[in-house]
Image (tube, rainbow, N blue to C red; front, side, top):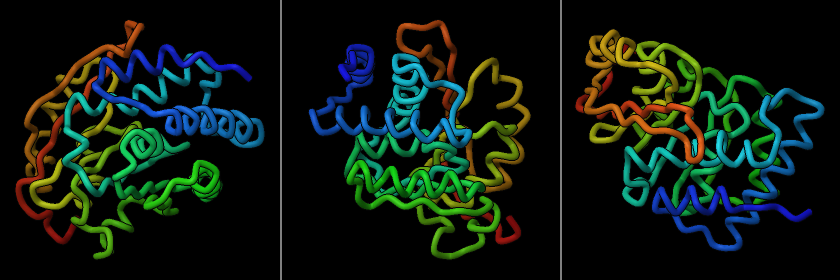
Length: 227
């Protein structure tokens, strides 16, 4: 099948990302496998190719607006679902050592098959709850960056994610809609968890009027053991 990758290429160009032919093929293969598996399990409501390019792939990669991915080595993706943003970030930045966590075993199996299919190395998927793995010293405060596109209030999401971030690292949640009030309401929780809200980066997805935001949260001190 002949796929038109213009939207992805232009979007990446805007983001300062250059994809080689291998990476472009990985995105296509990922799309095909996602759609194939989606017929038997619920992975995504978005299946049209151009829409997936924008709303899943470019949306995942857009966090370069908030962080220099070339300075990141280890990344954790909490509540990854069908692999967003973790898989697109790993494809675009192969140097990353990535861990993707999801609470549904079927999705984790899908991700493991995807990694093999795309020949991705230094990427793992783990099955479980964020709060359980956060207590495990193998994962706790081990990551330069924690990302999440999971739908949860920022205060709650911070409690799930900040324990994974090492001091000096960052937590960047992917948010849509109007979030100023939510950011304001989460400041106390973020501080208690050892984080500090530095900035909110707002933008629109390429070629759409869909508003997105990244909240830049720096980890300034260790998270208390009870969290």
